[in-house]
Length: 504
Image (tube, rainbow, N blue to C red):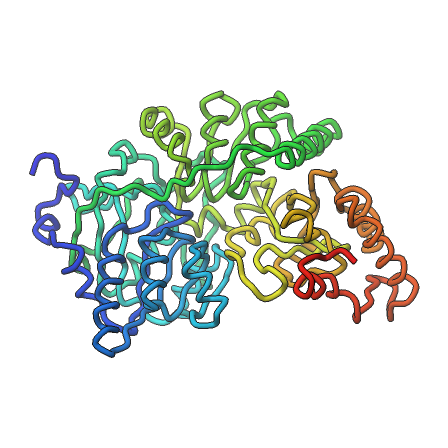
């Protein structure tokens, strides 16, 4: 088989079908799978398992599993298994509509946790034993080493801990990925931890492959399927305005001597606003930038090609179809400038703190004092999850949260008296940005923060309402340090649930 990506004879002998591989998974087991932001997830075994679960259910029997991943995956994994009610528990991050519906219906247990915590918590045994790992790779080398694909996520940990391993070898993934990864095997549990020897985002401190005991690999399945390459929407005016405010602020910080001209390592979430910010950095004349982040999306490829970004470290890609084709065509160029790491390294709090990252993440809402909700709609309906935003926000040199000032055609204000769910406390939030303006909260007491947020970030339709609440709370609240009227603090959310609008 000269064209096979499976270059190890012993593992080639374990080639099987997705259906046969799925037969190896038992009900009530814990299954750890590859995948991070829709890249590098197994494409066919989860769907075969979903069909098996459906058949078992039709016979009147129950078949559910606990699913662990790196982050979000795709309809072929989360969606397929959720549709057949095959997931008992899911962690640590999801974005699938089928899974989200069941989580919010209360029929699927979901643990939303910091992404940097997952690997050490798995080693501590907090999630129980891992029965099976299903991992996508781009190739298996002659020596049996596994070449990762477009994400690493928690794959190293899953391979180390799982009792049995199923490998999907995806020929759709470019062969040129080999050499782009940096898998560090020097982590340990307390009290045996040692410093991680990474001094700059582009440093390589590990191996280009994943190790796995070949005796644990019970099945190998060949696939040829694309990642979930979702197109990004065209930049809207709000995203462009947010990017302009933030880029102007960064220029100001450089002028004040708080950052070097090439800034500090960048971290950004996924979406239109981060892409707009990255484009704004190029237009603003910044050069020789670096990134230490979780995900590489379209905007970072653009900056690498333009020479604005010198190097980027992450754990996964999240590209549009067009950007993915560009990536494949120029993979030799990108392999010299991109490093993909396990997420316990890409999101490691000590590295984020020591490198001094500029951390830019989205949010659902913020309140008058800078507390941020990034996961729940109206306090109880989870959207996706905290992801890595907490890893970076708590530990970065600069913690920035961005959002348009309103949602749902203006019926919801993104700035409210009190957030309905707290993911990032006021102590971890440095800057808030909307299309209206930017609020630098550093060095401000709570009441000073409130004034700045109202004046600079809130939408004009809600500014007077926020000011009225704050003035009355400052006069009538039990304490005057962080003034709140407890009977009213969540009234805006209840009003939206009752009437469809937060406006009075």
